[in-house]
Image (cartoon, rainbow, N blue to C red; front, side, top):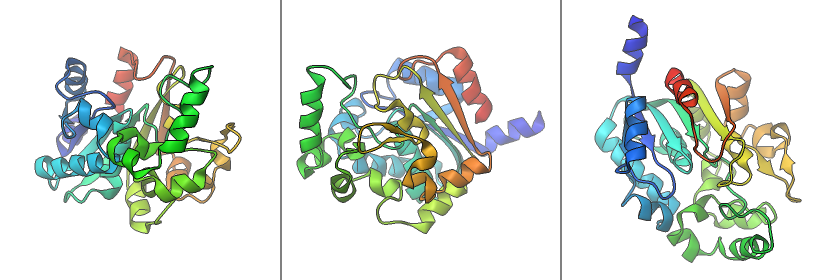
Length: 266
């Protein structure tokens, strides 16, 4: 019991909200309070999450972590796209401290390959075709947050060359051993995947899976990211430091039992 309370004192819980959300929203206030954490507001909140270069959002979050938690040990918790920002803090942010554990709740860790809530149908097919043709132009990378983690499985060359954010974070481009080592230094990673997720596609991106060039879900063990252990995810998984929690509901719809599991983990 003494060790439990010492752990809580040593590691501050820092929460990063998702697309269209804000730390000032009651839902985020309640969630952060349940975790005993502090929510980091990125830019202007909801508007910045939509209309600001995702790399700039991550850098802004890092700046705030430096200001508020310099030199401390923290547990980084991210909801939806906040899961990517939480990972950015763990591997890229120099704040004089260390991220001890990472919690990603429905986070698009390997990007998204379709417009939210629109993966199939007469209207969605042309919409996604339009998105894929435009998403890697600088005007979209600079002014549409989710463009920074859009992964077009049919045009990976464009993704690797022109995406402003995700290829570097995943060590798919500009490989960094330091980035990998920081990820390997995590004591644990908790990934929540929502089995009825209609927001991020594929939903399995939350557990580091991707689509192949034909649009089929690729088994984790067959991806280059995993086989070559680009980030160290395979190593952590083999060490038993990665925990996956499946939630049988839509995006971010957690019940008390799910939240209790997060609290136990942190």
